[in-house]
Length: 225
Ligand SMILES: Nc1ncnc2c1ncn2[C@@H]1O[C@H](COP(=O)(O)OP(=O)(O)OP(=O)(O)O)[C@@H](O)[C@H]1O
Ligand SMILES: O=P(O)(O)OC[C@H]1O[C@H](OP(=O)(O)OP(=O)(O)O)[C@H](O)[C@@H]1O
Image (cartoon, rainbow, N blue to C red):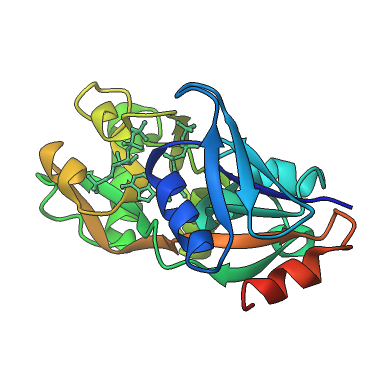
């Protein structure tokens, strides 16, 4: 039986994923021309590569269409309710580090904590007649985090990209997004709340609990896991 490994097909995680497997004796390569999302694995029989967008890996693991997959912990926890019953986090890979944070306009000098945000949200609603809007693509993680921390008077607005721009564009008052260097937040005149860290993410190797396990233990052993 073939063990299928889903790996990011491009972008920031692909090359580092290839390097990580390569260092453990499994050589992964894209095949075909630059734009073709196909790849091969050398170094072990019965292993095949499935090239996917990082954000599609959680769904493919959940469907059992891939046995193993590389993606960010943020994408697994956001996409899969009850994620740890669906997948097992086999190993953190040491790259793709990013923090999911809540950020507000830097000019809000009296808003530095979640408590301050809660107060600002109540005042905002009283003044404007609608809830303070937080733009994000991480709805599940942000909703759970704000609930745990007692912030209630807000509305999430969906943002699929360029989230930090929504405040200047007047489509949101605050954002919840991934940051690594902090450059994008700074450039958009936003600041992170001091207790606004929702999740620290990195790329991990996940195993599907929904796919038949044959072949997977031998491969994990081969990878030294
Ligand atoms: N600076 C960063 N910005 C965004 N994501 C980052 C950053 N650093 C690491 N990551 C992680 O990379 C993963 C997303 O990777 P990427 O953007 O390549 O995937 P994607 O959104 O599925 O891309 P696409 O759909 O364009 O293929 C997430 O797990 C995220 O946490
Ligand atoms: O802290 P920094 O190092 O500045 O990185 C963070 C930025 O990078 C990501 O955007 P990406 O390039 O994936 O584009 P996106 O807006 O489409 O998500 C993320 O959404 C932030 O906007």
